[in-house]
Length: 258
Ligand SMILES: *[C@@H]1O[C@H](CO)[C@@H](O)[C@H](O)[C@H]1NC(C)=O
Ligand SMILES: *[C@@H]1O[C@H](CO)[C@@H](O)[C@H](O)[C@H]1NC(C)=O
Ligand SMILES: *[C@@H]1O[C@H](CO)[C@@H](O)[C@H](O)[C@H]1NC(C)=O
Ligand SMILES: *[C@@H]1O[C@H](CO)[C@@H](O)[C@H](O)[C@H]1NC(C)=O
Ligand SMILES: *[C@@H]1O[C@H](CO)[C@@H](O)[C@H](O)[C@H]1NC(C)=O
Ligand SMILES: *[C@@H]1O[C@H](CO)[C@@H](O)[C@H](O)[C@H]1NC(C)=O
Image 1 (tube, protein in one colour):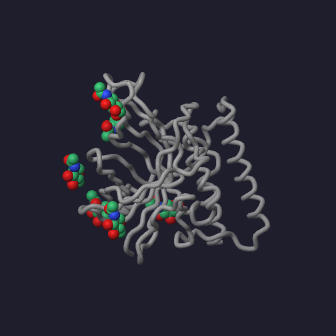
Image 2 (cartoon, protein in one colour):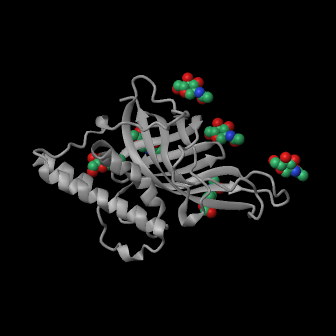
Image 3 (spheres, helix red, strand yellow):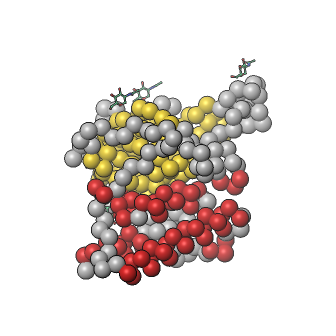
């Protein structure tokens, strides 16, 4: 019974939420993403029927994806995986309004984090298409529901200044801690990464390793941003306003000492 509950909760987390209308998909890219997603879900359900025992949500079984061809430096010795989240939000940039060839400057990001720990542990292939799926749907302060998924909010991501990403994983559900961070290393998103919503087509933001600054709680020490979708600005400022946002989604992996 215990095993079955886990399988159901892992799959339910990514199945249809009630108010979602599949008919709202209009663009070909959106249709393709949705159809891949539901095809994969259907396959999981079919596989589940043939399994003697349903998969267990054991987060220690989840493996951090590393970008290829350039791999991102992995977690330090002794790190334990604490949480995996799908982030959905915006990357903010500023642009020179007087120099058309200047490059946009990143000034931070704001994203809602959704609990994907069990999906990471049981269905890594499904996890890895979630940023692509999430990017196709908009969230608003009033409606934080992530497209057709039932993923539950597990935290918030924002910046405290231009170089200080911050993660708050203390929710009413569970207090996993807070993580003020700094960039440790970065590799370009692999070729073939999802370029952006609404055919913005500007590219996916880099994969990152962040380390926590003083003030982190819950033993959080390292945060990875991988399987990014969208978020990159245009190469130059021509035609851009002084500040602007680019939609993005990504997986965030949180590690710490146990
Ligand atoms: C405009 O930006 C480009 C690229 O950063 C730079 O090479 C150039 O010197 C800048 N021009 C002016 C007038 O600041
Ligand atoms: C990014 O843009 C959002 C929406 O305009 C804003 O609420 C947020 O404060 C901005 N963040 C930064 C770091 O500028
Ligand atoms: C994520 O979901 C799993 C399964 O429902 C649960 O055990 C875990 O506590 C959740 N984590 C957070 C941070 O909400
Ligand atoms: C940004 O915030 C971090 C952490 O609080 C701090 O160490 C750093 O000096 C700040 N940087 C700037 C430019 O204010
Ligand atoms: C968040 O949760 C951690 C871990 O349970 C706890 O130590 C901390 O006091 C909470 N609040 C903040 C702001 O870190
Ligand atoms: C990255 O993290 C490793 C291990 O935590 C540390 O030794 C190294 O100095 C860090 N590098 C940068 C550029 O912060």
